[in-house]
Amino acid sequence: MADDFDAVVGRVVLVHLRDAAEGIRQASRHVRPGGIVVFDEPDTTEGIIAIPPSEDYTRAGNWIRAVIGRSGADIHMGSKLADAFIDAGLPRPHMYLYTPMGGGPDWLGYDYLAQTMRIMVPTLVQYGIATEEEVDIDTLADRLRHDVVSQRGSGTLLHHVALGRANPIHRRHELFCQSKFQCRGDGRELIL
Image (cartoon, rainbow, N blue to C red):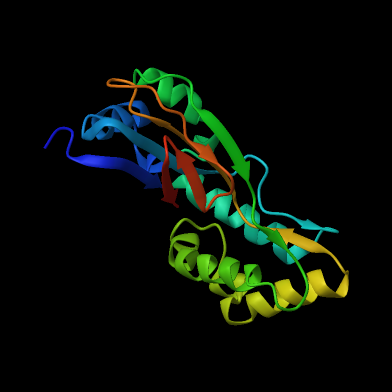
């Protein structure tokens, strides 16, 4: 199966591995000469915030960080991606930090954050981080929206770090990401 793939693209994968470098090393072995290796991983160092601050936004961000941290996942994986690539035997990659951010009544981020929390509620309760009543998941998106809109503010989702470089074992080609959705390298386009 070696060299069978044009690209290896991972999103929110390495954060769950004990040895991210080994995961990258193993995955890159299956990329054809000149292929692309790209990972997009969260980094909760800065957390999820609202500007001006919102109590519900701050609590939701703290709960997400607590669950990720208690689960054993590396809450700083995004910031560690370059080292993981180097430790995997690949050259230092280009890195891009992006944070979805928005505001106003129609921003989908409130619903996205509430759906993320909905998935985490059983784990929040299991770990003793929060109760179902504290989260009040059925009203969370509306509460987040109200807090941000009433203050004419904005909110963020998780920070992500995306990076990529072609498989240097064969040839070196850099990947240029114009946004989190579109990257170009060596005459090819990759949609993330």
